[in-house]
Every structure is written in structure tokens, then in C-alpha cells.
Image 1 (cartoon, rainbow, N blue to C red):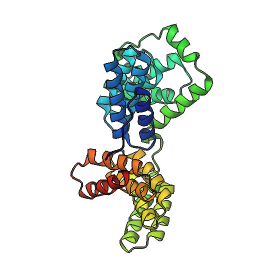
Image 2 (cartoon, helix red, strand yellow):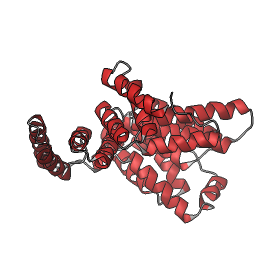
Image 3 (cartoon, rainbow, N blue to C red):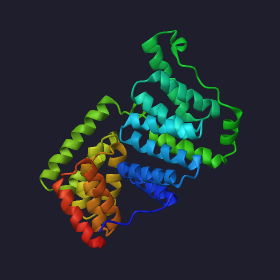
Image 4 (cartoon, rainbow, N blue to C red):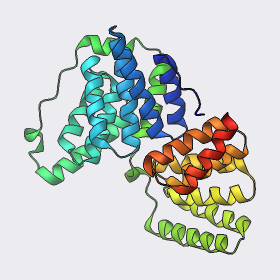
Length: 309
């Protein structure tokens, strides 16, 4: 018997937020979608809540590399509550990933009209300026779409929020939209990290999981952008029955690659060992959305179901 799903908009949104924090982006997206359908079926108008749900689902799409659906959901969010900072920044990041630099520039610039201290928008403007100069030449500004004028009411709405809320928004968006360009290790470090990861893999084949952890840890200290390194170290923690460490590593792996099947499977195994059957079932469900015919995952789901009954 599957765990009972929440049945209110607020509970679905909260469950979606938790899944997002756990790196379960497909599940979070599904929960936000269910909340949207429930809200719309009510027939009551709550544009703020509906806009937030679209924006949150857009964040899931962005994490999964689904930039087109991210843009679509951000546009829906902005149609409900114009000039909201989170959907503007998420859409800008998606446009940037699709190399639609002129559209990303407009969204970043719009954010800066609302608050000229948003770091991710300032950095985005700098990147877009360089990209547009390279692609369109010195007269690139003449080829931009018009930048909307932000009304005073939208600025006041943002300014009326507590400063802590500004910081929280900026921090969460910075984590989501930070591009690898600003975090890429040097070529030498990247190569050394790759070699150490391969050495770790060889040690795993020999059954020396403790030594493998040391190699993977050293690799990650040089470059923490490789999802597989985290999920490989998680395997070692699983074998050594260090289940909480395995969960942490799988979560990091999924932040880097929301479709890392091994990370979902290993975290589900760790959660099962920790008797957190609900989280284990959620991870298996996310995995099976990606690979419906994954035999080991289907078997694990049956085992976890028995514990949920």
C-alpha cells in the first residue's frame, strides 16, 4: 500500500517543498502540479498561491534541465503576479541555458529595477553583456527587445517584505541558478579529481570500501561537480552500514543531477535501512518515473511496500 498523499493545497505544497529539498525534483514537480489542479478546481481566485506553485514547479524543471517547461511555468507565474523576482530569475537562468541571451538579459535587467542588490541578477547581467557583445557586436543594445518598466507598486511590494525574506529569496535563488561557469575547477584539478575517482572505482571492485571513500573524498575536495563521485561514495557508505552518510551523499549527487538513478536507488536503500520507509518509497517512485522497467527498483519497492502496510 502506497503512502497516503496529502489532500490540501497547503499540504501538497509543503510536501513538494520537502521533496525539492531532498533532491526529488520529479516528485516535487508532481506534487506542485497536483496542488495547482486542486486549487484551480476550487474555482476560487488565489493568484498569489497559484503563482508560487507555478514558480516552484519551474524550479524543479530547471533542476532537471527542462528549460522550456521552466520558462512556460515562470511565464504563467508572472501572468498571475507580474514582476515577481523568483520566476523572473528562474526564467532568466533557463533562457541563458538555452543561449537566448537577449531574453535572459531582459529578465535580469527587470529584476534589477525591482532590487539592484540581487547578486545573481548582477552576475547574470555581466555574463549576458559579454555574450551579447561577442555574438552581436558593439551595437548589441540596439538589437534587444524592449525592457518592461517596473511599476512603483511592484517595487513597493518587494520592499514591504522583511529584509530577512529578501536574504532568504536571494540565497535560495542563488543556489538554484548558480551556473557551473562560476564553480568550474582548474583543468589540472579536474583531471586529478578524475584520476582519484577512477582509483576509488578500482578499490571498490577489490572490496576495499574504506580506502575508496578516501579517494572519492580527495577527488571531491578538488572538484565537487561530479554527481557520480558522490553516488559512488554513497555506495561505500552503504556497504559499511553508514546509512546517514549515504543519504547525504546521494542528496548531493541529486542536486547536481536530478536524474541520477543510482543516487535515487542507493538513497532508497539507506532510508530503508534507517526504517524511513516513506522516504524510501518516494525515492523508488522517482527512480521508476525515469526508468519504469528497472528490475532492482521494482523489487525494492515491493519490499518497502510490505513495511508500509
